[in-house]
Image 1 (cartoon, helix red, strand yellow):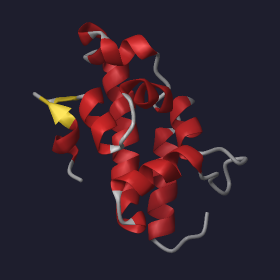
Image 2 (cartoon, rainbow, N blue to C red; image 1 turned 180 degrees about the vertical axis):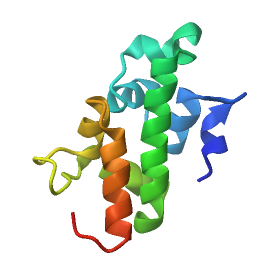
Image 3 (cartoon, rainbow, N blue to C red; image 1 turned 45 degrees about the horizontal axis):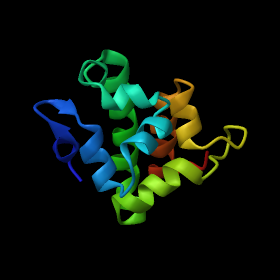
Image 4 (tube, helix red, strand yellow; image 1 turned 90 degrees about the vertical axis):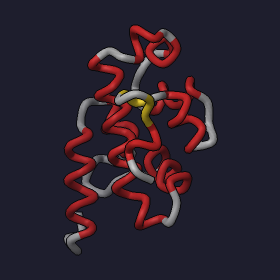
Length: 116
């Protein structure tokens, strides 16, 4: 899916993300490493931190989607599959600890045929 499908008026919209991944906005917040208020209060949704975490999560799922055939399966991978070379952490755990760039680099390496 294109990134615009997850946004409203130029900002990532937790409701649209939740709908695409068939989950709740609270679950979207948790998987992005945010509190429930971050996706429920308009001022918090628009904050730099909330938008950055939502963007990172959506970028990773979008980048993994072609490998899995759907955004829903890519989201399940993001949440549950331990990544080799990262001490058994999932993409979700790495994003929550501020390591989204490492996950994106890992996906690029796997796509290039390098086994991480």
